Length: 348
Image 1 (cartoon, helix red, strand yellow):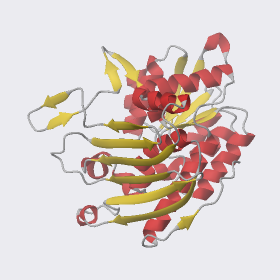
Image 2 (cartoon, helix red, strand yellow):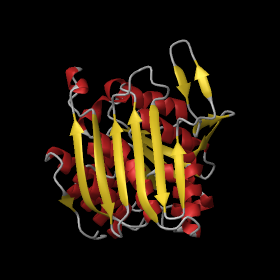
Image 3 (cartoon, helix red, strand yellow):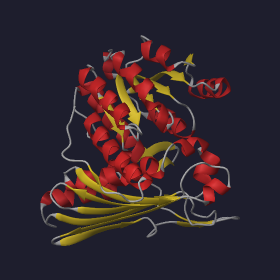
């Protein structure tokens, strides 16, 4: 893999909503050269290629993975399509930045983690919320020992109904625990420093199915970590169109000697538009015409690891542990709240 002049040649597989963000961030990072893109939508492929000046365009991710002009690949496909693309990249000897969740089945996650262990390059799961200042600062406080050990975490992360019904209709082939729950479970696991050993959960459907989308409306899970910490994790895809924000997020961490309370609705900016009132603190996007924020910082970290041979903050084993826990959430939901015992994690 080329590291000439400190430049990482990057390809992007999947050019939709999130893929567009990956393209913008890659184009804005001076140590990255965007050399190849891939999507089965040929019209979108041509549009993105022209917009970002990329001439190597593929409709098959295997061809992009084999391209000699690519050192690293961002895989930004729907959740259920991660397995084949991730393996193709790793088996081609390329660095891999894999969008969360790593996979939505344990066998797929195990296969990716095993391939990452064999591969010569870096494999990072893009759980970019770790680079949000509130969460990275919270981690620093916990590591200082001032707040004492974590006892209990409550977390909610929900989306307006437009996300599954308009923006990402393929989400009916996933579950809100995998799509949005993974973000907050990752933060909790990072904060606690232990793995989930026991899960009990329920979900309910109705509203989305009435609208023709075959997925659940919401879920609620209780997770126990090795060492005794407990987490209540919940999420939904049915916030009404008038809700002030496409995402609602709360993270409350109770320790022996203090509390970390992160509430998205305590906003620094409110915007009243012609159709909606939104409350949000911008954390990523184009600021003064230049991409910045937590997703950009996650990419920079990935580039650092690829060029300098470092281990990423979020590894394939982290992705596997999260998939095991989230699959247990879904299994418990499907078994009417049955307790699912996970036992100790076994890294690949």
